Every structure is written in structure tokens, then in C-alpha cells.
Image (cartoon, rainbow, N blue to C red; front, side, top):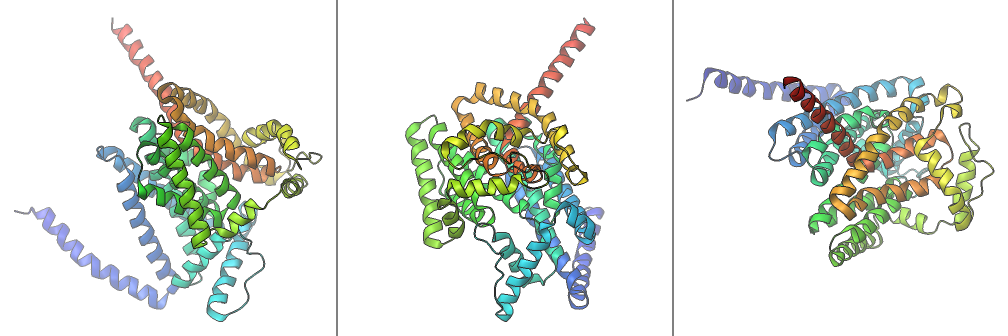
Length: 446
């Protein structure tokens, strides 16, 4: 027998559904932009609910609800911040002027699809995926940048359940509890997914590939193999150099990090074969793949020099046009890439957003060190999966970029791969603090 409260709940739900339907229908007819925004908002929230339910701790309802709350709260923050930044022109130009280029490219692609106009020359292979994604959204919902902001916000919020799953599978639920606050504490994870930029899609595709690699390290799964190859192929269209390095790092780590060498080589080989087959046969990400595989050291050196000559650049006289010269520069480049900018390298108001980012990162470095030590002690060679991919990625990015404004954004991709280790180190510190507190309380009681 139903209680009175449950009867009232069902009646209110039955009345609410048609009211919301009529309201949404009127919005679509009389305010298309608002209607499209509401539909996109509802769809992405439902997707985040589903993702949090699938990837949350299956046997711990309290932890799962906490993860969901963080995910939805982060999504709301990203949407609100994104709308503010996009609608204040000075903020857009100050924090993420690239958003204007992506919007222009997406509009041009949409016009090409609908009117047959020429595609813009700025659509370069290996980084045009985001513009095409925006154009696809605009084809469905109309040319409203707010839709792109909502989807990017969902990508940023989805990092929480995905990286929670990675950390839980590797280091346990206690370590995974630190993931949601970390993804808000680091300024870059709060700032870049709140804008119409490539970063949120890049972050999420890296996180999905990482999650699949962790699953494959424990058990061979065709679903994980296909998902990982698909995410890396898509990443080749968003940011080809990062996709190539992440793929190389993850595949190599799967091969050498497994306790059973044969299984590791079979899994890594299968992953590499699937990815190459998908790229070459289906053509997904082929432009980015071709761009990276045909790049020479001289071309990398040209990008390096161009980056160094900007306002926040450094190392103008450095030459990395050969493997030997690159190896000589790498220690200094890695130091600047992972730890910079240092206080004496901040010049002008435009570089001020880098200050909180680097300060928080320095604050987290002890937790990273504790996490690496704890993981190596508990899991042995399995820690290769957490160390090798970010090391490979940081190594090449340190060669390419010699501009602190760019480094702050590019470094987030490396930090993303280190989040499980930082979370483990964070949890180790809190566990040690709790033990000390309990020990002190017991001594006081005696």
C-alpha cells in the first residue's frame, strides 16, 4: 500500500512532465536558442548521471552519490563560468581568444554543408576535430555557441567519474576520493573546460584511453581495446601530437608493465594494430597521423623557435634541429615545462593567470612524490602505466613549446595522467595524519 507522500510524488511527477514538455515546446518555437540550450543541458546532465552511475563505486552508494554530486556541481560551474566568459568580450580575448577562431571555423564548416561555400584554409589537419564537432552540434541545434559551452562543460565534468574509475581500479576507493576535489583545485581544470576551446575534448579523450589501458592491464577486453583505439583516433583529430605520444606511452606501458610479459606484448600489440587499422582503413584521424609521422626535427625546431620569440618565450638561442641537440636541451626544457614559470619569469598582466596554476601544482608535487613511492612499493612494475605515458608526453611537449602561456595549457594534459598518483599520495598523507591523531588520542587516554 502506497503512503500519502508517495501518492503526492507520483501525482506531481505526472503533472510536471506535460508542463515541462509544453514549456520546452514553446521555447523551441518562440525562442529557438533557449530551447536548444535547454535540450542540450538536459541531455548532457542525463549523460553525466549515467556515466557517474556506471563508473562510480559499484558497492558503495555513499561514494557513488558523492562522486555524482561533484560531477553535477562541476558541470554547473563550467556552464555558468563559460557563459560569463563568452558573453564578456574582454574576458574571451584575455582568457581564451582561440575560442573566436573555433567559432568562426565551425560557422564556415556549417555554411559549407548547407550552402556549398569553400572551407576555410585555417582548418589544419590534426586539430580540426573540435571545429567539426561544433559544426555538427550547430547543424542539429542551430548556430548557438552556448551549445558548445554546454558540451565542453559536460566533457570537463565527465573527467571526474572517468578518473575516479581509473584511480579506484588501480589504488582503491580511498585514493579515488581525492580525485573530484583535485579536478577543481587545479585552476586549469576549472578554467579551460569553461570555454569554447579544444582542451575539454582533449582531456576527456586522454582520460578515456587511460581508463581503457588500466582495464586492459588487468584483463583483456575487446570492448576496452575498441574504445581505447577509437578515443585515440578521435584525439588525432583534436590534437595529433598529443594523441601520438599518449598512444605510444600507453601501448609501451601495457607491453612492459604487465607482470606476464607475453600477455603485455599481446595486449599492446593488439592495441597498436587496432589503432593503426582504424586510422588507415577508416580514415579517422589519418590527417593528424600523417602530419605527425612526416614531421622532421627541423620542423619541430621551427615551432620551438617561433614559440620562444613570443612575449612569454624563453630559450631563443636554443637549437633542437637534431636528436643529439634535442637530448642536450631536454633536461632544461623539462624543468621549465614541469615547474615553470618561476616568479622571475612572470612579465605583465597577461601572464598573471599562470601564477595560481603553478603555485597549486607546486603544492601538489609532494603528494605526487608520495604517490609514486607508494605505487612502486605496492604494485611494482605496474606503476609504469602511471609514469611512462606522462613522461613521454612531457618530454616532447617540452621540446616543442618554449612559451609559458602555452606551457600552462599544455601541461594540464600531463597533470591529467598524474592525477591517480597525486590522489594516492594525498590519501597516504591523510591516512598518516589520521593514524598520528588516533595514536595521540590513545596516549592521552592512557
